[in-house]
Image 1 (cartoon, each protein chain N blue to C red):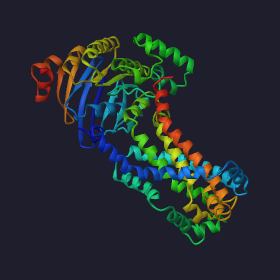
Image 2 (cartoon, rainbow over the protein chains, first blue to last red):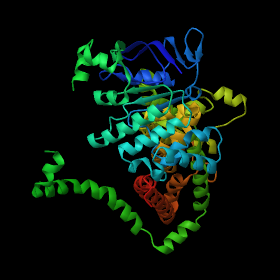
Image 3 (tube, rainbow over the protein chains, first blue to last red):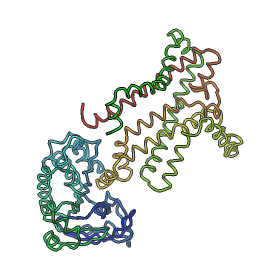
Image 4 (spheres, helix red, strand yellow):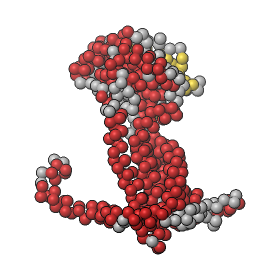
Length: 237
Length: 274
């Protein structure tokens, strides 16, 4: 499945003008703070409305300014995991995972059964009855990823999935995440601020600065001949 | 070094500070003790059996429940609107909502009279419809709504502001409509703040005196709420005034206790500690 995001928008002081596309492989989005990475993910999820352009996921244009198409977030089939994972603090891990089935009118017993099954496969079933407060960063990440997968997303949007972790947890979770993204065919956009995460994902990279894509390509290509100081510094570390 | 840390490390300064703070603390607490000591069980029984007591209690209970329902029903959307906006309009509205807190209750009463009274802003229209607002139970409720709403709206807006926007986006991507995300995510997360604000608003409505007296009058059974009954009782039998005051003070203290305890109880529930 392929996707294509070509949007322009002004949001506060950010002037976003981006045209990127990809296929089934995960794509990494890198850039300095405030460059528009998170805004871009939220826009794809449907939280912001671009001034012009379109967003195509698979065969469907979920947004098209000219055609007047603007699907609500709940109809876009995107799996969004925000920075800090965005678990609902008032719900148990299991109820977080099963949240999307609530809107589809699935019975409580069935939600529990299916949620536990999914958490089993994600290796986090033992966390089912815990609340997000008590979970480590790595555990939260697993629960949030499981939750995002329940909508059968056509595209996964992960905002700094490894940022909240200490160095040791980061290694373990990085492996887990790379495995899952590799095992699940389908597009993913992963915002990252560490070269090691990008390497582990084996992802193509889009570098964004001040709302513009400044360089795209494989990690090797960007590391070899970086187009900007930021890209050079990113791969130097 | 923090100011608190500095004070702790200097015990003599700490004592001086306590000495300076004592008068205001005493002034806050001693009158309540005085009130408690003013009555004997026999006096209390006389007060409770007075013809002023039961109708005022019943009227206060009814009107404050209705006014709280109105405040929550209309104040929640307003609070959400304030919490999710950022423009100049939002800031203007925030300031307007605070107005009834700084405007004296007596002024609120006159303002309501000049709005809903016979010669007021809507006097002609209301008169044509045969509706009289001043000096009715409806006026009591209106006065309570105006003076208590700011407490709820500000607390609710503060609670809603603490809900991370990303959580709502996540809820939307997980199939919830805008309304569903609000009801299933924003409201549960903000609930402790909403309940706290509602309790404060209710306490303010229960104690409302000045605006009610001017706008609704002091008619037993119709507009004479408990604070107004105290005012009337003082002219005939102090024991009745003290009895009603004790009931109001007890309710207030229960409320305060619940408000203090609620956040930690809530936190332990949401953390799954039982």
